[in-house]
Image (cartoon, rainbow, N blue to C red):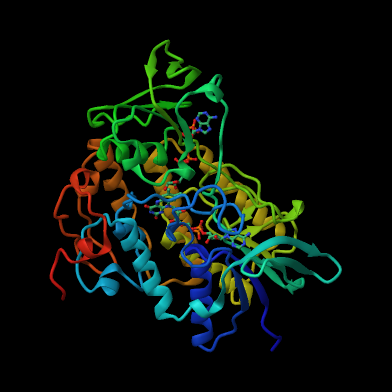
Length: 454
Ligand code: FAD
Ligand code: NA7
């Protein structure tokens, strides 16, 4: 039998950790697996779930990866993102409400990784600086810097590269006429850390997706003044915004503290928060290997959303690059599929067939009309990967996602107070002790200890 493939894995967030998890499962089962070197630029695993108070640059002068904020609670029910082979009930040993705060999700993720002793496989404080493909030898050269000693490591050669470096860390920061002379603070959601900071302040939120919605809600919850959200394409459209939040068309200019909007109205604000999304940013990948896309459910050029078609060698893969309804379970099945391909348990079709497959998915994507159709589409994507690897679980949680969207449209303030039943453990989440809009204690201890232990 030929030797194992040598894989460079970039990033130890949920996507990268899922690759390590499935590769170690293959190993434990005595099956052929890869020799993986995982480089992680932060000093801990968890990706975006590894909360940092820092903004801008990290302690080594690298781009700060973290975009999450202190008061973040899951925006989807935990029953939609739990791993089928490691449920929340398995981890906490009790039933909990359906929408946990950030620290609870991080604890859950770490439980699965610790159980499989995955920490040893991650090289922390190492940032990948360059990846190039060697045509003659059909492999990659990877340049890495050890941040802890400020030293470039000798070049390493790998048969495969798996990019799991995330795509919600480098902000899109548009310019608006007069914003440079705005007397108050201007920040991007990437640098937003504490909603309490804006107590009593009037806010302009630019953008109309998850960050805009959640940051507007968090700020009102924590006592901000009025919040005006403005949109480029279409409003978020919730009919039940809490008092003090409204939506208007995009701003046209800023004069002093006065914001002018496309509909001719104006508003006085103290702070501008740009919730204008993130770039796909892979400066360390050489041009021909670099994924260039906008945020969408099926980025172009990736077979099964994973294998990079650009180089023609099928040895470069990207994980977790989709826009996300499904999150942890989608990254996990994608990683399981990628592990099977790398180890040779799954054979890829020829290039023409792969290109045709991508085309079918992307044509279908063009027809999607609303969030419910998006969910059905991503469910199909997840289940397709699951069937390819012969996954024994049915990962379809679309009924839960549809109910979640119904709840959000019915009332954006109370959707996190609803409960869901896990399709994997059969357990139904309990009501949280306090409605989310009035719940100010987001500690793991309070959340987990509101019910007696098993
Ligand atoms: P990331 O979590 O971004 O991890 C990527 C890792 O790669 C990081 O550890 C980073 O340090 C490392 N890295 C990057 N570049 C390099 C390099 N050059 N060299 C070495 N290492 C590198 N999802 C949910 O399911 N529920 C939620 O409630 C939710 N809330 C969110 C809130 C916010 C504000 C944001 C931004 C995202 C949220 N998400 C949520 C989605 C989130 O993207 C996923 O949950 C998940 O973190 C994605 O995992 P990942 O491993 O693909 O990427
Ligand atoms: P998204 O989902 O990429 O949304 C970005 C929003 O910003 C979207 O409404 C865009 O408008 C808007 N945008 C982008 N550029 C501009 C300009 N130039 N002018 C006005 N508006 C603009 O990012 P989010 O941060 O909301 O979500 C990312 C993740 O973080 C998500 O998974 C969450 O879990 C948390 P559009 O609607 O395209 O017209």
